[in-house]
Image (tube, rainbow, N blue to C red; front, side, top):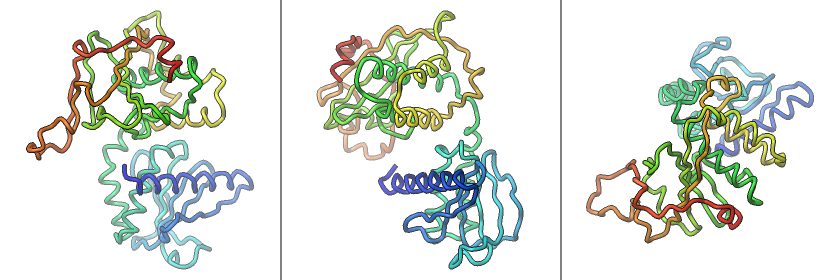
Amino acid sequence: MTGEENDLWTDIDVQLQVAEKSYHEDGSVRFYSIPDRSLTKLSHDNGDDILTVSGSNSSHHEWRLVMGAISTQRREVAGLGGSFEGTCLQIRFDSTDRFRLVPFLADVVELVHAGSSTDDALSGTLERWHDRFRAIRAPLTKEEQRGLYGELCVLRELLTNTSNNARTWKGPGRSLHDFVADDWHIEVKTSTTMPGRLKISPLNQLEPISERLFLAMVKIRVDDEGGSLPDLIAFIRGLDLSEPDSEHFEEMLSIQRYRDADADRYSSKYSMEGVYHLEISGDTPVLHRVRIDPDVACVNSLRWIMSTESLPFTECDPQFWTDL
């Protein structure tokens, strides 16, 4: 994700939050502008987020479902003036899906800003997002459940053993590393075997950085006496989190596609057998871009599997967490 993409996502998210707040204050729908994007407006109406785009050439129609989470309509929108005279395209989705669908709106907005027609921008974005829409409301796979469980095990250790806050958890938000603080990063991998077989992607994930970087391996086992993913989430929600921490935690769960409505699907129970860490430095024998022969110019991306038995992983004792 580029800096410009991140800025646009933030702009859209902030304006939707403002629109939702104003709606709840008096029940009226107000339209808000996206900075430097004059052909689009954002609003909120009774639980739905809406993007309005000027210049549609299609016929008027009422709301219709175009994919699992998205509806569209085309109509004249009174009071916006300027380029919004005439038929506008409106794109609507439930605001509970906001964290997942802000990037969709950003793709439409950017195509229109780059000169695509309004209708082409929608159809092109829908085509690119087709597979992603199918997954938006799908329950987490077993592998996704275990990965999330491992990240939450590390979050639990951080929250109960250190002064670090929940906002260091960044993994679901397309961060290169799962936990990011001012002077350290942690990338988490979950394993049900020992020695572990850890999937590493993208290629630069274990490239040394200016901050201290740790690879954390969370060893879990299936255990009927253990706890489920919803149990672990309930435990973290029960901690004395600040309001910003609590909001961030729920945002990350939403981006990861965890929904309480699916909790009965996540009945598998696990016990955490330990968390092991490996500090990554320039001397650590792991694969990253610098270690690929520059003559192999065809390598664009790479996913590899780490065998952990030959690497000096150390179990995380309380002092490890305290020192972070």
